[in-house]
Length: 336
Image (cartoon, rainbow, N blue to C red; front, side, top):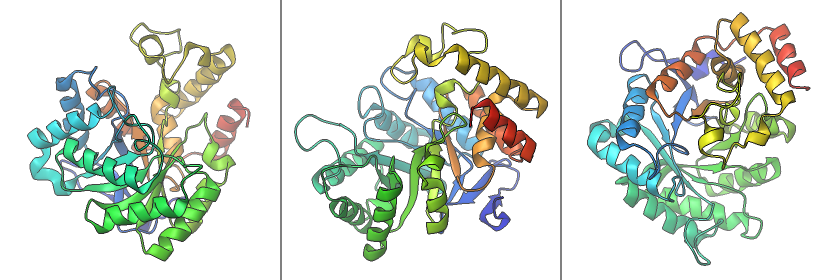
């Protein structure tokens, strides 16, 4: 169970009843639910909707906005839109926000716009700050492992980014256990505040359990923030009766394809939905609560296309306790 000393429950008011969890052994706290800009903040979205999403999130205690250089489409557009929103609505609240960005995936053509070199990471960080209109980001992540660049170079680049004032903390994303362990050891030698690993995690995707990252980060004092906690929407009631015309599968098949919704998967979703109802939750609420249940994950990253989805997801924090029987039932449904 989560250490109660590591959880701060905000007073009623703007922050509602949001829980704030310590990120590893650092002094920073993440809201239990954070807003991700991976989807719905690009050049193909409605700016008014983006603005409403951010305002709704912040008004209900979501103080972390998570971005990356290539979020869009097009690349960079999510940061550009976020920068406008920060300038118009949140300038006075900068010290109450955690704003993050990342670099590691392809961003621009040529040999210097990808992976984990010092040249790419520093240049990309500068570009992100310009798009965001900020002097610094709270966390700058290396977005994925680089099989060719020495990890020492990548960590030294993050160290430079922090020491130069471009970021307050450093993070890694999509790092497996061996790379995470090596990164932590290098960071300790550099005295770099490398505090968090961002990994995919959901009831359907147990990768951080299977490769040992979840247990290792707990022992090493590194926080974990989970992305795709709803398996790109499968762990909701959206697909219980087919594929809606306005769903992610129907409108954007880049990350969730129709082939993912097999009869076996649909049966699992329906069985999990039945359990959620018994718990007095929606399937989405239960799926988010399941991730937060033991305190090893300090925040879940949600995406949203409507403000109402944010309000629904926040309800997950009201009940993150599961009986042993419920946990066994979830595992059995998923074939674990």
